[in-house]
Length: 118
Image (cartoon, rainbow, N blue to C red; front, top):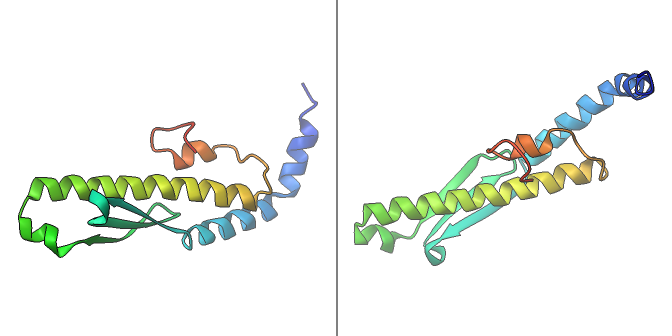
């Protein structure tokens, strides 16, 4: 029952370092940028490691066609692909910062379904 108290005490001693590391990690996630594409590249979405959509690019030729439903589908697909790539890149970046040490809750944080994906 008391065997984990040493681990808890160590965690408490390192709480400041852990907070600082997490702040640096969060900052660095803003620097991670990936791109998702759809329709053979006619639509692209740039996303950062904080899962923020930074930009969406649409080929003007696609706009000339006037197919709003197709455009909506392609934008959705490009954004979702970008978010998926950003989740993977963020998980890798955070794992590298933690020196391979597993971060509790990381999968839940980066997986919108609430578990297991990162």
